Image (cartoon, rainbow, N blue to C red; front, side, top):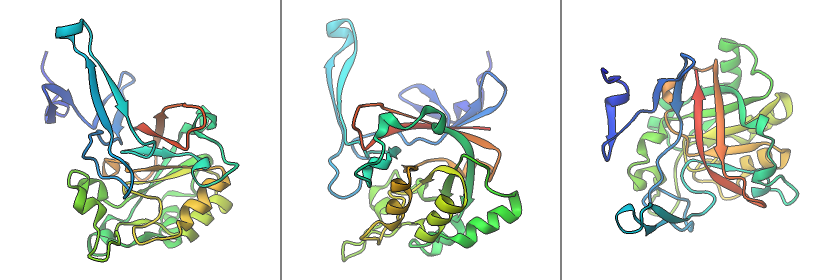
Amino acid sequence: MAQDPEAAAQTDSGRVVSPSRLNAFGGRVVDLTHRLTPDFPLFPGVPPMKFDVIATVQTDGWYEAVLTIDEHTGTHVDAPAHFASEGATIEIIPAERLVAPLVVVQIAERAVSDPDTLLNLDDLLAWERRNGQIPPGAFIAMDSGWDRRAADPPTFLNTDTAGVMHYPGFHPDAAAFLVHERDIVGIGVDTLSLDHGPTTDFPTHLTVLPAGKYGVEALANLGQLPPSGATIVVGGLTHVGGSGSPARVLALI
């Protein structure tokens, strides 16, 4: 059988992988998830994941490892409880809210010259002028092109000599508009945080999560998606009391 040239575009230890390929229903699936390694860039103070092999096929007859990982590692979900004492923990988020119409707002051109740029209210209104009103139950994703930096942690964190990080995020006014004027399930970014790098008080987190919405951080491959028409599927752990979870996030087109 001839190999799909798109699927063969990347290999990892001999396993064919691709961020985008046809599914059984004839649509396209785009993987919005970064691969997890101990070197993946993390928010300062978050310990890197540990992967300890405890059994191998050669020695034990099966392969198994113990994974030790912070909830907010790699592509991951922020549950409302992450910033709201009475907010829903990860296992309480209704499954139907984890499958949603996907709105992609592109700010990558600005981010090239201004790493502190914010997805603002004007960006959302411009998106609606081109695509119609944000649909009910939508998930709003910021595409800043920052995911391409993830393989190089220093450029992903983009920390200056004073220790301040610089990367894009959502303006709190845009977040407030989405929470109060539109019916959304959550927002996502291709950077380290819903708030942009220089923030010290996390106003976007404090706008979105206490309102019962969830966030997804460190998304990948948003640049492969249309501004509207895709569906996002967010998967993660359902450990009781969790503030978040590493996630496998897919877009269906």
